[in-house]
Length: 118
Image 1: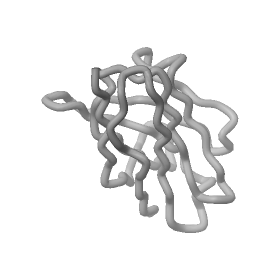
Image 2 (image 1 turned 120 degrees about the vertical axis):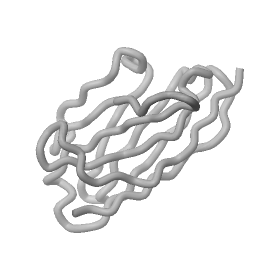
Image 3 (image 1 turned 135 degrees about the horizontal axis):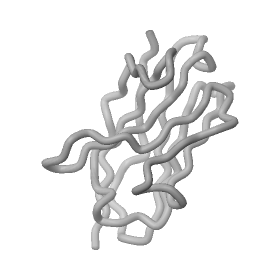
Image 4 (image 1 turned 180 degrees about the vertical axis):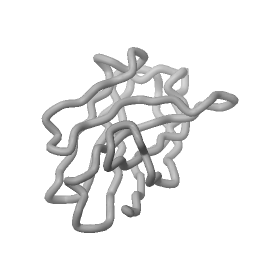
C-alpha cells in the first residue's frame, strides 16, 4: 500500500498552466505505475494519463494529449502532471493513483481542485 498526497491545484485563467504534484510514501514507489484522473462537476471520473514505473513512457487521454505531460522522480517518490493551455473544461478535482498491475489502481490520493476560468 502507498499513501498519496496531491498538491498544486488552484485557479488559473484559460490558456494558463499549472503543475500538480503527487507525493507518495513508502520505499517501493518505483514499483508502481502511476495514473492521473479527474472528476469535473457533475461528471464521471475520467482517465487523464499514466506513466510507466521507470518514467520512460506515458499515455494520455485524447482530451489532454499535447497539452498535459506526466513525469516522475523516483528518487523523490513524486509524480507530476504539467498542464499547459488549460481550458475551462479542464476544471475538475484531479487525483493521482498507484497500481502494481497496469490499470488496476488500488491506492488513491485525496484530490486537488483545479479551476480554469474563461
